[in-house]
Length: 474
Image 1 (cartoon, rainbow, N blue to C red):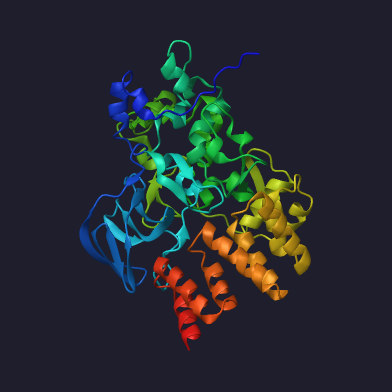
Image 2: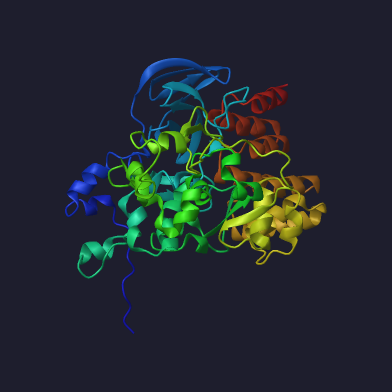
């Protein structure tokens, strides 16, 4: 039996010879500019989260150390975050440039830090919506090939599918055109990056990194929202990429159905805003037709998950929506995909909700993500260790399992085994602070000092690591 070739990704440059005009216009859009290698930055000194920083070229200086500035993520429409690279491992820097206010300040999640933290791992899921053809190293948490991604920004093939067969014979094999897909597959192309929800749980044996245009996103993940959010998305905080779920609950979307989608108002190739024409197509006798409808009905609103970010509210509120008071007991429900026991258990666990355990206990399949969460709440040490061991058979580089299993081994007097798994954790992510600190307790003093010093090279201002070093030296 003869088999057809499977299309593979060839890169956006392969599109240029036949689509030069589109390529030129798209190269200037925020999506195309959402990641890349850092260029030297203008000299500046500023204070963020109580810490004094200075930037000179591609070096960030702070009390207690310095860091290189190697990559960026973010188009600079709202802002731009920065990454450092050490031996192929990527970490997010604690400062961000907020373009709308033209200020440097703490990155989201660093606002309340009392010291300069450099150990936040940049996992592949962090890069997927900013870069294309990401190259993670299997068995690690945050190590990548060189370069970490083969294309800057969102490439042509992220929305049109892999292009090798089309390039080989354009007339025989067509690329995916999202506008010509059925509504679910069409919307999946945009939702892969513009649907946040309150939790996203990958389906068993599925990885979001494998999703391709033309497929259904619900086959890869379940997206869940708190019930209050489903009922009234305008009543909960606006998130950076919560466009899809907010639009879905708008009066316009409910009335228009599948006819209204992201492409109704946005031209991804040029970043042209078609919102006014879309509004007037239904509201020709609008009360202020000379004004931009979106100014009042899609107001710019402060983002709940990004400092200083102001984004468009896609819930299209007729008037401002106050926060709900005395809402019913919140519960998660599927916005997209299937909310089975596995999805609900993993989502509640991710959100720190105690309801997780009852769902996880009956989840099918009981794959490694389920067993990892069950191990965390298992009160019997031997059972917890067995669960962690089973997780590591399927996912050898899972740092949380490695760190926690080492603690159980150490408590049981199995010190050599504890040391071995903590060393594995540091191979998966050299800046896993818990592994480094635990290792320094288990090792003889000379080796412990070496372990802590290696960690401090990555995260020099860490108070726990500095205190531990002094303790060993005493």
